[in-house]
Length: 273
Picture 1: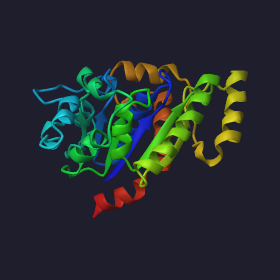
Picture 2: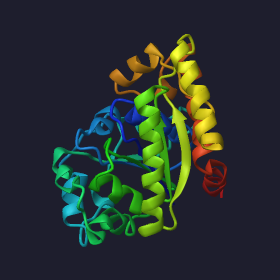
Picture 3: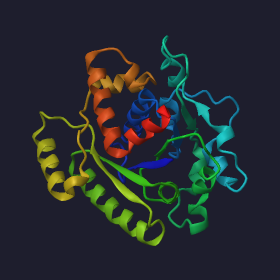
């Protein structure tokens, strides 16, 4: 099971939208996936069209991490049933550990090592998923550290703008320090440039700067600032299920990004067996 945290130091860069796009790509590829919404704003939960059905949110599960049953409290995304085809009536697996404001009790800078292991403890008792995507809050406080402790990889999201690029550089330094002290197994999956406007000279300049600063860590493709993609998210819909050429193009970008971030080919081979 690969666990990938989607992180950023700066808010508003589209971290949750990247999480949703990757979830849509994984659903289409038939990769059994769990999305854990650690952001107290719970936007990923909303975007994945979740109906709670009396399940316990992830914040309360973290509080009772020793005995909490994450598997019993995941909720199927509303996208999953829509992904079923007439040829194959099997419903693909895309589940959600629901976010809530309650998880904010752990989003503090002085979180100890024991608390940082709470999500890892919950995931240790979960099976059936090939991929776990963790949507982190836009900070380096406790919830992000909880996510990093449980993860194999961290994907950083940045806009091609001065403050976002500087924040990404700081996040890389913080990630390396965290890896050395707490999580030697943790790797950087890369950096995705999001909301790129090719017509903007500032964006072109910052993209060139990011290539120079981050080298191979800057993943391809970058993701454009596309109004149609914003419309898809506003409808709480999977981009791979949305009609139109623009949505198909965006879906293809997320397919490529998924392949860059995780070993999706190996996961698909396991599904076929």
